[in-house]
Length: 311
Image (cartoon, rainbow, N blue to C red; front, side, top):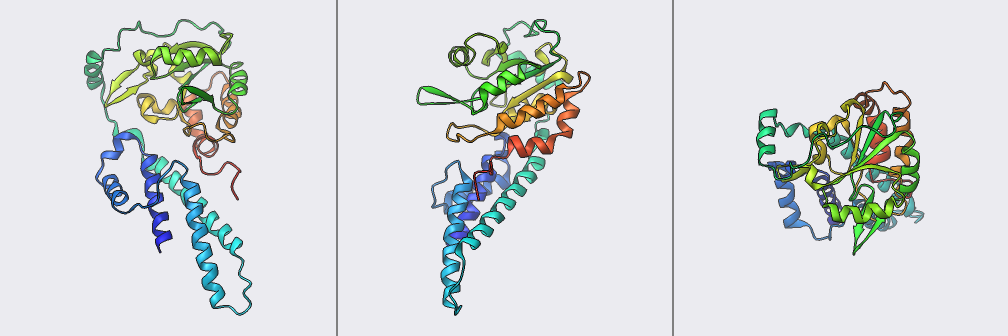
């Protein structure tokens, strides 16, 4: 029962970890936090799946020993038990992923235009000329891809950055079809030091936007795509924080966070054919296309539980 209890707490922690910041103030989330604070004995780390597998392994060992006591042939296959337990965890958490993808949406951020004007009037970062982007250099590129930096295409650790696996191939392929813009809430000096290394010949990124280009709303540096000077029906933003683009959430692709510890991460590679399929038709409205492709995107880019390296 202890192992089962720990698995429950791990799932609670997982739920909290995927919620937007503003949702964490709700009463039911606070109750989950209270449960974790009082009862959690296992150190929570980012890889919830590994913790669940450890818990399941302990449960399977216990079940195996119990079954051995009550079977005459002692031919209980503990590995089979572990397989089914692990498989059930996969199904269960993927179901949770699907549920919270629909349940935890950005509709809670009901900020009307008048409120936004008031917020912007107080925002010290609005010293940039709008629109932020000039006319496209390559007019054949109908669509614009806006990339976040930290934990989306790189991870910064101990004074150095780790590119997300497949980043070079991703930029090379997508650059053929999209105008690529980097839009980060990081400071300019920090971002440039990384981007100069990634794009040494200045061939991938048409423009770089930084913290001073964001709007500060509810403790979040929000990226308002309407300020770019591009048709919103042709802009896609890729970011690991939905809060960052909640003003144009229908333009966003939420990508799982990259912390530099998974060399098998394939989110960017999986995204290439999806972006190519959207760009095939210059008349496509990306918002409609992203809605149609939401399930495929969720499976290949968002969920971080199974990348073919388990079971």
